[in-house]
Amino acid sequence: MVNGSKEGASNQMRNLSSRTNFRWWFAVALWFLLLISYIDRTNISIAGPFMIKEGVVSTAALALGNSLFLFMYGISNIFGGYLSDRHGPQKIALVALVWWSVMTLFTGFVWSSLSLVLSRVLLGLGGCTGR
Image (cartoon, rainbow, N blue to C red; front, side, top):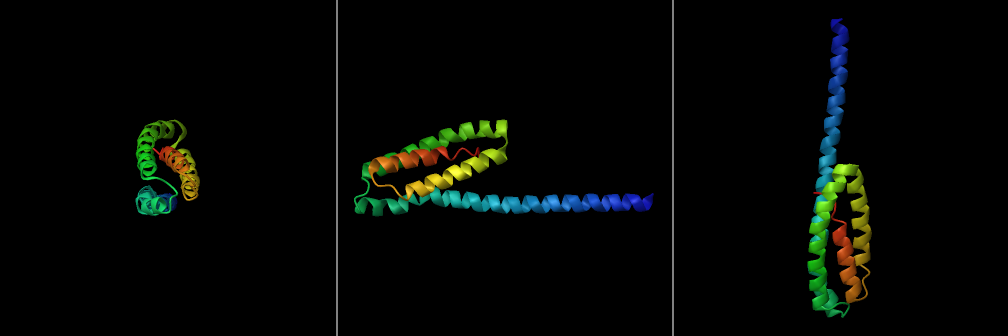
């Protein structure tokens, strides 16, 4: 009986250890995801002057796009928290990650001031991970 309980305890410790390792790997992956997200939110301030210089967008459109991005980002986080509670954070984070990635790609192909503002608004909506 003592031997059986030792094996059971050993299996439980192994399971606990593997779950803990997964949680650490998940935390590290999430940290990198948030780092990339932060860099993505701020890189438009570096690319913006070059876009203005090349005549792709105007200064007013860049400012409007950034303002609307922050507004939509803030609003979408409220709904993202609700959606995460209702449907689970993993599903909502995955949808938001895919949305964010596609909209970031779209931002790289803007051709006018209107397309920049639209891409920034849609990118802001992708912030709904409920962080």
